Length: 316
Image 1: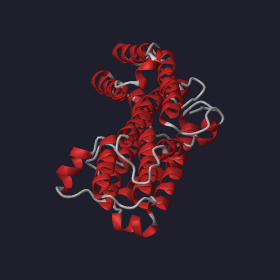
Image 2: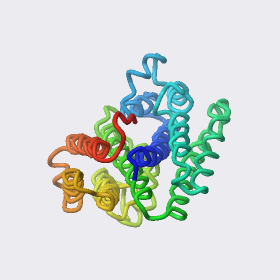
Image 3: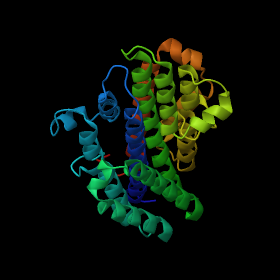
Image 4: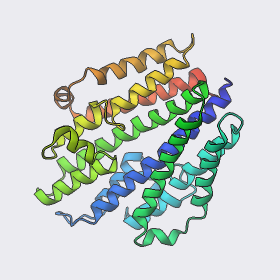
């Protein structure tokens, strides 16, 4: 496969997944902002969202404080923000358009229709009761895209690059999400409140579609250690770090060549560390330190995949 074709497929998938992850982050903050805060700081969660993605400085160039309205405008509609939902869906569509002859007509129509609807979405709706419906719509369109990919695409190299992009993006986003949210919920300065604490942990699980999964796996009270275990080490949890790395490794192996041995080794090593890891060891090391190192290793994989397969100077 031509490197340029692989590049477009890889980034098309990453942008679609990124749009969904941004919607999930904003959605959980919106839900948590509806709960009275013990410390009265209603904007803390919105600032944390910017911290997760690393956009605090870019946000401050346009806005003074991370209020709900300002962050939503910046992360949903701001065309100059490459990580906004609008920008992600536009870039997904542009990459899909570049490889229309490689993807199926259903994939193209789904991606194009998503962009057209997003382009014409009225801003005023995010100021009303429809804000939750918008986030659900973004997640649904991402689900639809993956479903069409699985249901219509030949299991060839194009398919594997698409899936690789999806799960590398998911691994990075899930790790960042756990890190910042865990820090906020466990190490916050506010006095503990059982009802608020339970709702916040529930909101965190719901933000990654894991609330019902948690109940099935543990069948007891929500605890920080078990939440971390589910989202990091459980290979039956679709958005866990372990599941994401299994997918990355298997799809990388499917397209491997003589140049990719070191990249494949590093992916296998990281996947094995999740397979045989124990949550007690993660906490003994320090959850923040563990997740920070994981993000570094995932980004290293992304850089190596770009060097091995994709066109030079790919931007994300």
